[in-house]
Image 1 (cartoon, one colour):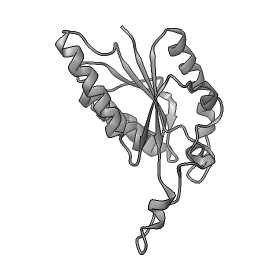
Image 2: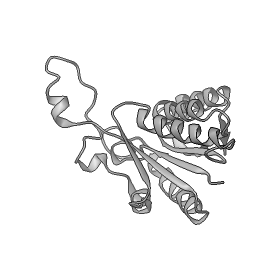
Image 3: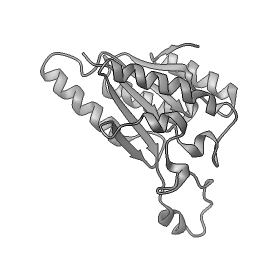
Amino acid sequence: MKKLLIVVDYQVDFVDGTLGFEGAELLDARIARKIDEYREAGDAIYFTFDTHRRDYLETQEGRKLPIEHCIEGTEGHGLYGEVARHRQDTDRVFYKPAFGSSDLFERLANLQSTADALDTQPFESIELVGLVSNICVLSNAVLARTACPEVPVIVDASCTAAADPGMNEKALDILEGLQVEVTNR
């Protein structure tokens, strides 16, 4: 049975772009190695991209906008560093306008439904890495746990981070409280 690796939003704007933070770049080689491990084992790899459209932002006249980031078609929207070079066209990609990916949830739920009919599980495990631990990694881990309740969900603490180290630790605590296995803490 295959494992699934989900690389969450390891994008330029979250590493050294508009919402980047010191230390995020240190995850690059670790995540790339993990991608290599999964690929060599023949496992599945998914990527999520935080995705915003400039035309939408421009129509929000009078509303306080968040910091522009991950605008579709910009350099900041792309994957960062080695991770970018490790993504293949055959990897499934989910573009999301908010923290959690409803398309990812739907995909996992459909795979779970098919597996249920065969009295099996869709994956041996689902592991998440990427940014930001206390926002998008946490959100997508909850969605994975919800869609595939019997599949072990794992977050590698050495492959995720937040701008605020205290929030990172709190997010890892919350994940453990949600029965997500946190490794390399």
